[in-house]
Image (cartoon, rainbow over all chains, first blue to last red; front, side):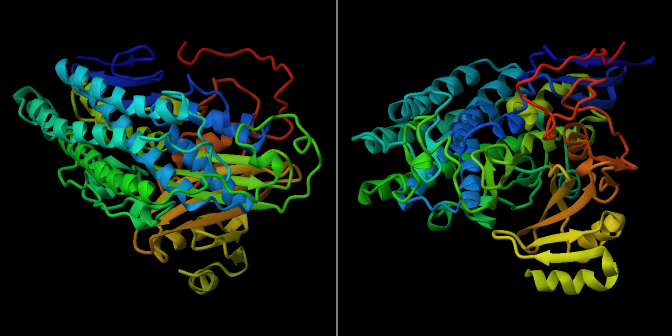
Amino acid sequence: MSEMWINMGPQHPMTHGLWNLRVKIDGEMILDVDPEMGYLHRGIEKISEDRHYNEVITLMDRCCYVAGFSWEHLYILGAEEALHVEPPERAEYLRVLCDEFQRIGSHLMWYAAFVQDIGLMSPFLYGMRDRDLVLDLFQSYTGARMTYEYMRVGGVRNDVPPGFTDSARKVLDWLTARFPEYDQLCLGSTIFRERCDELGILKAADCVKHGVTGPMLRSAGVKRDLRKDRPYSAYDRLEFDVAVADAADVTARYLVRMEEMRQSVRILRQVLDWLDRHPGPVLADHLPRWLGAPYAPIGNEGYLLKRNYPKGVGFSAIEEPHGEALAYVVNDGGEHPYRVKFRSPVFANISAARQYLVGYHVADIPPIMGSVDVCVGEVDR
Amino acid sequence: MQPDDITRALGPKLGDGLLSVEPFEGTAGRVRFRPESALALFEAVRDDLRFAHCATVGGIDWVDHREVFYVLWSDEAGQYLFLSADVPADAPHIESAASVWPSANWHEREAWELVGITFDHHPDLRHLLMPDGYVFHPLLRSFKLHEPESLEVKSRHV
């Protein structure tokens, strides 16, 4: 059989977004792969240089369209450090609330899409149904289901409405009761186990060498989670365990994500209890007007005035649902960030594709790439 | 790990290739170095300081010069470390870190096409996010957002 290159993408059910996986095959064997990105490149880093600090938040929601809150949080932490702003404590807990519900939402989206790739239809419907409950919660306090624009430099836009914590607890109870069902549908299925066990193996040493982070790294037994190793916001005051597995294959990544959702529920129960007991402001009150207005009126005085604000650089790192995300914000004293640089975990995870795809069969690509959890919005930015 | 520890560990190996180690909030510090001693520094940072994970590589256009920065993570120290080097704007190039940290490969491709920094001896320096044949570097300050650009885009596989 002769060797040839084939394109899987940009339109292919496996891609979950717009990108192209070029695969060199000999018969059914994968000899080499070359991922091609850039179909969704919008130049978010460049556009940010032309925007006021709070306006960049709009772009962050579009960075990763299934984990908008995580990216808002990432940017906000960097911007606050660069602008020397401290948020109130309640805002930090509200951000953790957003982050962890977003992690559940993102993992449920992954669960739905990944399991459908393998050919199981029912889990797709269950995953999407339960993710909708999380989106309903988001809608109740941000007004949006996908692009929230909720966090602000110095806090968050508004507090949660009365009765929110009770409805959130109901969703958590519902989800907790569903997790065993998810496991039964997948781990109890012979088809799932035969397709996923010992597939797409990437050992810990290779993960570190090729920059792979997040659930992929933890499925190889490395206990690295920035929420524990470099706590941000309120994570140092919350109790949870880092989910790890050791098989480093597709099933192990499934197990890690499922356990992460259970741990997120655990974190969220603590956060909701804290929110009930500690009312307070959600936006810092010492902010300059151009930064502080919750519904920032753009173009008012202050925005165009030449301001004399201290320079600074901000660096933030958070554990996004997909892995380690970094932001580097340079403030040169002007109205806009001088430079914003983001590190996307999926970008690095895809760049290592050769390491976990070569040697398997063409039919193994959908489950392996599914277990990577690709979100093209944050790869291309 | 403190900036002083880093100076003690790297100083003897690098000599005047090491310019300074500054404190940087939330990280182990920021190492400023001469681009000529890049490879020696990378190896020393990986092997002696044990920063095994290269999280990202990026560039900043300061108009009169360009800055290349590397963000590294060490599981042992539980800290990030910044490395940065200034390269001249008329000939912006530095040795590739891909031989030391393979994960730098794509990040350097991105920094090359967006900020215009050439990484010498890079295994695979071609366009990643922009189309082949794209001659601009969008993250340079001279690239204006509100002005039209025109170019002929080549297909990648013809």
